[in-house]
Amino acid sequence: MSWKSRTFLACLIVGIPAVAAADALAPADVKFDDMSVSQSLTGQPGDPVKGRKVFADRKLGNCLACHAVADQKDQLFHGEVGPELDGAADRWSEGELRAIVADAKMVFSEETVMPGFYSLNVGADVRKNLVGKTILSAQDVEDVVAYLATLKE
Amino acid sequence: MKNKIIAKATAVALTVFVPGIAIAGGPVDDELIIDGDINMITRAAPPEGHPLDEVLSGWLYRTEETRMLETDTFENPGMLEVEDGAELWNTVDGSAGKSCASCHGDAEESMAGVGASFPKWDEASKRPINVELQIDKCRTEEMGAKAYKFDAPEQKALTAYVKNQSLGTPVAINLDEGDMRSWWEKGNEAYYTRTGQLNLSCASCHEQNNGNYIRADHLSQGNVNGFPTYRLKQAALVSVHNRFRGCIRDTRAEYPAAFSDVLMALEVYVTWRGTGLSVETPAVRQ
Image 1 (cartoon, chains in turn green, yellow):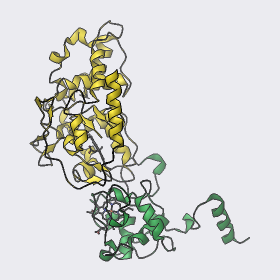
Image 2 (image 1 turned 120 degrees about the horizontal axis):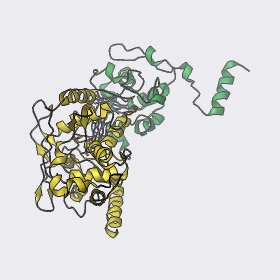
Image 3 (image 1 turned 120 degrees about the vertical axis):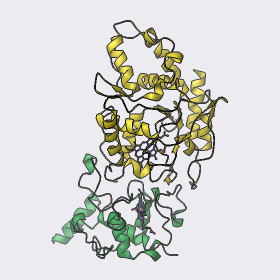
Image 4 (image 1 turned 90 degrees about the horizontal axis):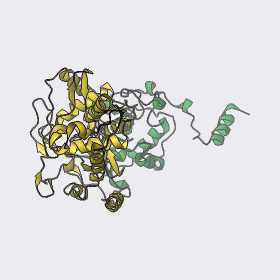
């Protein structure tokens, strides 16, 4: 059995996505160039349908805690801490959106309250079981970016 | 007892009530008058050095239904635990055969205004103490009784009873005693320290974003003048250190022990931020 198909089988058995974490860029290796991350974090295209769910899921992106977006009117309670995201893809390129989601501090400023979703630049006393972990997986970020890219007016 | 059941049922019904999509808007323009005759101060001029233009009670950020519950002593579900506190005040406990009343008499007289001035410097332990720790001091040193466990129902009830004797009195703590200022400094530092995987400080939510909704929650200035507070979500009184720990936990951080140095410092600092607001104990929050 080839290495590839073995990984594929292993993924099926434990039910994790076919893109193993090993293929993803480590948070420290993500390159920010002029407020943009041009390279996909996984080398795989993002899935906007999954990204829409990650965006709303309180345990994952929970982006709705801070941002309202008309596309998700079906969800109760949109936050007001950040700007409304209608038309976000008209204002930002895909690379910029990836940079904002991966580490907003690299785009806005150290002062922003938006968490870095694929960054280990975190606050003090991180809960023990989360040390060294990012809020979202690399593929979650790609999925969210693919979803944001659909937000055009 | 019957009252207790009705009030708890009301609380549950209100928690289930869904206000619909959140609408923008800061604090409401409303006045808190309790039982038609206690005029509460819910907006105050900030003490010198305060970062905000106006100090506002969390009451102004709650829904009309929640606000109403606080205007009437009989409807305020937190008053049931305050009544438990009144009973404890008069109950003998410990080897010395004393109750709180043995030393302090009628709480309505001896405790009037007292709750508004805590945390206070405690020369013996060389640190600030809050009402909970003062009660423990009385229990262990005067009554020969054990200190309460953190958040024991008796601790919350008695603390709320003592603070309720200051209902309406403006919060004013004395930073000139002992080392209070250095504790204020430590609390100030903690307030602006970002914690957890979400990398947020108290200021991220309560200073920069009060008046904004964070998902379904309308962010207030995070003042402590209403503690212990009746939370509809929990259908019980919630202590100030419990609230601090909850907010820190929400940043996905490890949270400090109750009454630890960092939480006492934070209580000194956050209490100061609410200077001038009426004590609302037991406030009603969502």
